[in-house]
Every structure is written in C-alpha cells, then in structure tokens.
Length: 120
Image (cartoon, rainbow, N blue to C red; front, top):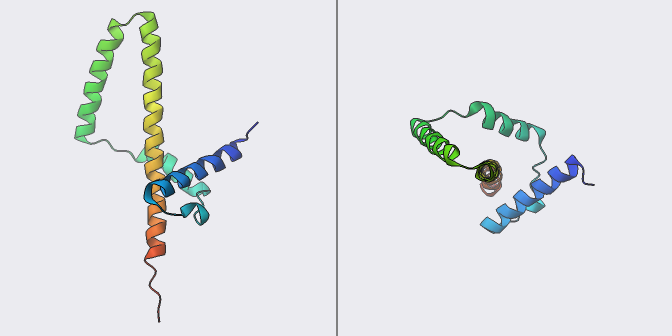
C-alpha cells in the first residue's frame, strides 16, 4: 500500500513530467517540488488569499441560480448523479489550480536558471 509520502512524491513527479512534456524542458532532473513551505503557501493561497472579483461574484451568483433550478427539478437518482458530477468538476478545478500554481513556480525556477549572467 502506497504511503502519503510516496503519493506526494509521485504527484510531484507527475507535475514536473507534465511541465516537461508541455514545454519541452527537462525540469524533472533538477527541480524538486518537495518543499513543505511551498505546499503550505499553496494551501494558504488557495484558501485564504483568494479574493473574488466582481466578475467572479457575478458568475458565482449565476452558477448558484442555475444549480438551484436544476436541483429542484431532479429526481432522487438525477440528484445523486448531479452531486457526483459537481464533485468531479470541483476536483478538476482544484487539480487545475494546483497545477497552474506549481507551473508558475517551475517557470520561475527555469527563468532564473536561464537568466544567470556569467561574468567573463
């Protein structure tokens, strides 16, 4: 059975490999995402630092209205299916946000590496 540490290492490898596949880089060989502070910062950022914008608030309001209309028209089976659909969509959003956060960090490290000016 895989431990949480092993799962986390596999997740970090997956993110780096996806970055490398996307940008044709080789970060998996020189960047470590195993940084507790980075993970804590992401969790804090995603939970506490998010400030909604007026456009986000408007979209959220519309989303709730449509969701309420749907929920009121569902049978019990449809309601269960909708809840599962909603949960999967939420998980996809979290996955995307986490990936974008780590991609930003990896990109910054790559730019730092590439921008070192050697003195001659």
